[in-house]
Length: 248
Image (cartoon, rainbow, N blue to C red; front, side):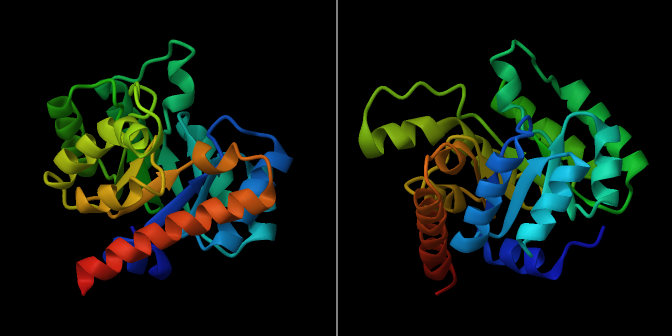
């Protein structure tokens, strides 16, 4: 696997910001708004649904690397042919409300299937938060052996914040931060901390061992382009600050 040089640098500096439009979001207008905000706000790369038309759209709007997400390996082939730079098995958050669960065996099987189809593309795999932490760590180790180049954590949908403001944001991010801490100490590949992350908790993710964060709803659910760009810039600034302190 050969990772794009700019992605390699960002992962090495532990300052990655992935902006997510949504695995099940096929609305071209919505995806375009998210991609534009990511580009103008200074994100590292964007993550969109695995759809060739959306890949073409994203590529017309930004020079940022484009990641595509899916849970059906065959969808990756057409998206990569359309120009996707890397692929992600997950994110799973949008499925939980439908009662759809992803167990360790299925995620590992999806990884093997995807690697058989696309042996050289950079591959990120999400570890389901429905597993216990020790099961998440074991799965992450197995995924790396199966060819995963990046491990992504999640957990925002399982947290139930009881406080407003900053404390609530920390409560919401707690499950994915815990997973990032445990997994980053068990695998040699970069870990992205996603799901429930904000500009408050992005630095905590890096401190926990993550190489960066993936953020979706905190950006793509905002109702104006200016607000979306500002949210991206706030996250970039938060990550830059902690990165500067880490390498000072």
